[in-house]
Image (cartoon, rainbow, N blue to C red; front, side):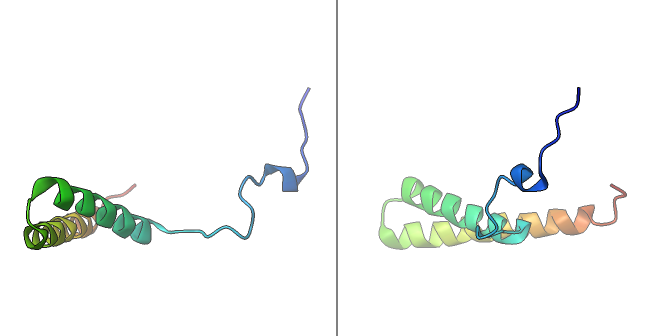
Length: 75
């Protein structure tokens, strides 16, 4: 016995919610993680800022490089 639901009931997310793609999600995640790493990793505010910026750049750079290398793979 198959259950049939109206199409509207299958939608869990309201249409007014923001839809975020992969790149902005990656940038947001990288920013938040780099802030935490900067706060926990260094002592002075200047060192925290520099370290956080380096970690953020490394996250974004590595992700873009990995995506560029994986682009020609036949998924």
